[in-house]
Amino acid sequence: MFYIIGGVAVLSALIMVTNKKPVSAAMSLIVTMLCLSGMYVILDAHLIAALQIIVYAGAIMVLFLFVIMLLNIQEKEGRLSGHKIFLQFAWIMLVGYVFISMVKLIGGDSLPARVEGSINGFGTTKAVGEILFTDFLLPFEIASILLLAAIVGAVILAKAKVD
Amino acid sequence: MIADLIEAIAKILFVFGVNMGFFAPILGWVERKQSAVMQDRVGANRADIFGFTLIGLLHPLSDTIKLITKEDFIPAGANKLFHTLAPFISLTPALITFAVVPFGGQYEIFGRRINLVVADLDVGILFVFAFASLATYGTVLAGWSSNNNWSFLGGLRAAAQMLSYEVAMGLSIIGIIMVYGSLKLTEIGAMQTDFFKWGIFLQPIGFILFLTCAIAENKRAPFDIPEAETEIVAGYFTEYSSMKFIMFWMGEFLEMVTISGIITTLFLGAWHLPFISDERLLSLFGFAGPNGSIIMLMMANIATFFGKIIFMIWFQMTIRWTLPRFRYDQIMKLGWKIMLPISLINIFITGLVVLLK
Image (cartoon, rainbow over all chains, first blue to last red; front, side, top):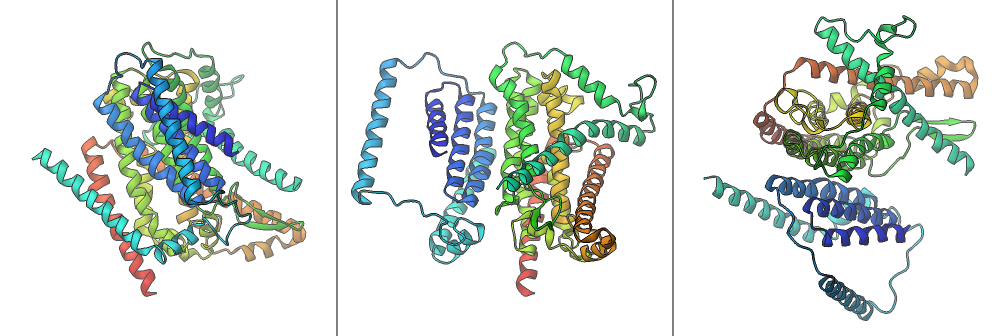
C-alpha cells in the first residue's frame, strides 16, 4: 500500500514540476496532497489526514486554481530540452542522496520500526489535542501568532491597493 | 471475518442503493413536481407506459433513456481530460460523504453487534468537510475546461462562493462539537435521545448557519450564481451533454441528500423519534421475540432517519422555489460580513456556556 501511494505521489509531483500548463500542474499537486493524506492514514494519523485534505487540497489549492484562472496564466512557449531535464533529475537525486545520508548520520543507522497497535489512542483527535495543549502549548501559540501576523499583513497589503 | 465482510458489503450496498437507486432519480421528479405545485401548474405528467402516467413518476425513467442515448459532446478547444473528469469529481464526494453518516444506532442481533454506519471514523465530521471541499474542483474544472466564457464565469463564481462559505460552515459546526464533545457522528447521534437535547434546541443559531452554508456549498437557489440561467446561460455546465450533464444533476441531488443526512444527525436527533424512546419502542415490538423486536426497532430507526432526510429535502426545495437569486456581491457580503462573525460569536457563547456549566 505504501509503495502504491508513494509511487503515485512521486509521479504526480514529477508531473507537477515538468508540466507546462498551470492548471494541470495544480491538479497534479492536488493528487500529491491526497496521496500524502493517504500516507497519514497508513500511519494511523487520521486527524492529520483529514486536516491535510481540508487545508491543502480543499482550501489552499482551490485558491491557487482560482488565481491561475483569474489571471489566465498562459503556458510558456517552447519545451525544456532533454539535457536540461536530465540535469534537473541529477540534482534531485543528489539532494535526495545527501538528505538520506544526513538522516542516517544523525538518527543512527535505522529508522524506528512501526509499533503495532500503537500507543493508546495515537492519532485520534483527543490524543492530538491533548498533546497540542499541554506539551506543545508554546510552539502552538507561537504558530498561531505567526498566522495572525500573516493575516494582518495580507489585509494591510490588500487595503493599500484598494485605496 | 466473513460475517464482518458481508455486513460491510450489505451496508455499502444499502447506502449506495438508496442514494443512486432511490434519491438520485426520484428527486428530479420531486423537484419538478414541487416547483409545479408552488407555481400552480400541473408539472411533469406526460411520460406514460400504455397510458399509465403514475402522476409523472415515469419521467425519471424516460429522462435517463433520453440522456444515455444523446450524443456526448466535447466542445472544440476544450481540455478533454479535465472536461471528462469534472463530472466524476463533482459526483464522487457526494456519494463518499454518506459513508460516515449513521442511518441507525447499534443493535445486538443474534449475538452480533451491528453498527449502522458504513465507516465509523474517529474524525467523522472532518471527513465530511474534507470531501465536501473536494467537490469544488468538479465545478471549477468544468467551468475552466469547457473553453466557454459563460462556463468560465460560472466556474470562477463557484470557486469564490464555495471557498467563502466553507469557512463559515466549518465554524458553524464547532458549537455542536463543543456541546456534544465528539467528532464522531455516531456518538453525536446517540447522545440525542431526549427530544429537548436535539442539536436544533441546543444550537439554534448553528443550525441556521449550517443550513445556509450547506445550501450555498451545494450551489442551489438562492445561491445558484454559478449556474444563473438568466445571466450566464447555465454556468459551469453549459457545455455538457448526455450522461456527463446528468452527473452534475445527480451530484447536486445527492449532495442535498448528504446535507440532509448530516443535518439530521447533528441537529434533528438522528434516528430517534421525538418523545418515544428506543426502550419504549422495544417493549411495543415485544410480541416479535427478542431478536425480532430488535430487528423491528432497527427498521423503525432507519425509517425515522430517512423520514427526517426527506423532510429536510422538502425544506431545501421549498427554499429553492421561494427565494430569488442573490447578487454576487450580496453573497460575498452575507458570507464574510454576516455569517462568519455570527458563527464566531456563536462559538464564543457556546464556549462560555459549556465552561460555566
